[in-house]
Length: 228
Ligand SMILES: O=C(O)c1ccccc1NCC(=O)[C@H](O)[C@H](O)COP(=O)(O)O
Image 1 (cartoon, rainbow, N blue to C red):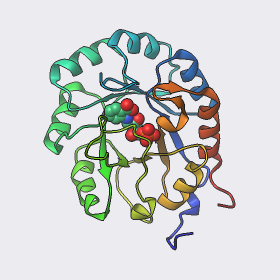
Image 2 (image 1 turned 45 degrees about the vertical axis):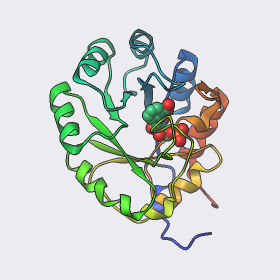
Image 3 (image 1 turned 180 degrees about the horizontal axis):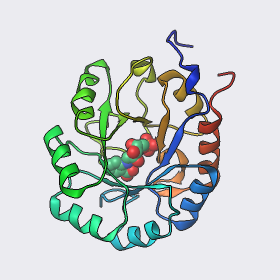
Image 4 (image 1 turned 60 degrees about the vertical axis):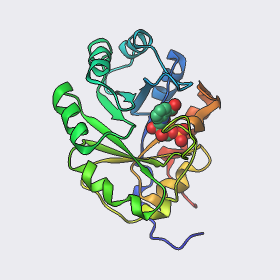
């Protein structure tokens, strides 16, 4: 085991986001298990991509109290207008190379809370979290994608959770990247995360969610890591 400070108060408190949902039954599995956020991906290169009309249909059926998050990558105002006018979202997730200025602009123009994904590979990536924290409502700490990756996220890769152990930020943040039902409890303990996000770790194939894995993930995240 690595020698890092472990935040045992984080146990049992994790709020879970299941990202890249495409079917009503998978959303139902997530919500019934206790997930607090559901994510819809609007990125045509992704196996999890949804057309706006599909997302609208799914989002309209999500029960109140569950945050519906729309994930976009370097979006134009036109795309955001189309999405937000059609889909009843509660939050926009920016998963591209949006600058802090652009994050601020999107937040002001579209009147929705914004979660900005920040890619982490090593300690040199951590200072930029403060730049985004100043303008976003939440931060998503995700593994930095490999240079040759087709997707800027949803690659099932983890970063070294010890990099953020014991660090505190003012705004709410989520841990993401390569989480699975098997490792999420340990990740929560090591990173001190109170919120976690998963996509490929609850799939049976790219873009195909597995309700059993969703249930196992939410259960593991909410139980914490007794004995880990
Ligand atoms: O999921 C995608 O296909 C995707 C496409 C473009 C940008 C981001 C994308 N996914 C991000 C996520 O699903 C999560 O927020 C997070 O990165 C966790 O992904 P994973 O490592 O697969 O659990």
